[in-house]
Length: 189
Image 1 (cartoon, rainbow, N blue to C red):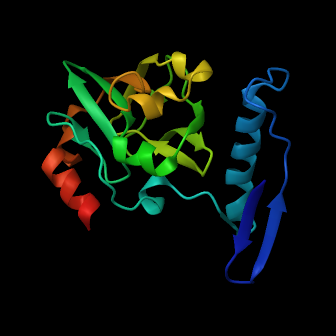
Image 2: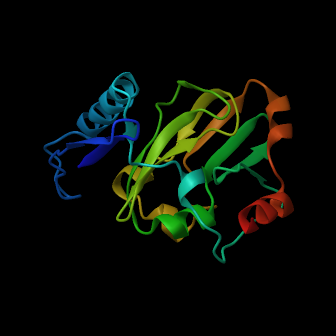
């Protein structure tokens, strides 16, 4: 279920929806995506807040791997720059805090993503969280393996768990990202 609350009025609204077992294929994943979008669109109009926090607000520092040569966001996404294409995923720190990943929602190839805007969702046994794009541009590839094997995010956040590849439209946005040392320092705060 999704829990929405209005701190100003002290009210709450719980939406319960059927979540089929992972192996169940009769209910398409876009039904959950549509429900999520409905809640996101409706909640602010009703003065409500979603109980599903972003990765940036729900993660505390733990001992995890940080890779030199990658760029990082405060919200725990990483970016690997190869020419004008950037590979994107969530950090090892993020996957460790989320726990076993059971579902990953990614954009379609050919769609456009925007710097610091939501491009997908990661659901785990403990939580669900939005995932943010470190760069603007066109999605040229997604990790289709994550549809059937979302646990690859846990097994290799920087390798088999990558999420999308983006052809950059604004390379200067990379300057706003952190290097490995800056990201580690941010996690320690």
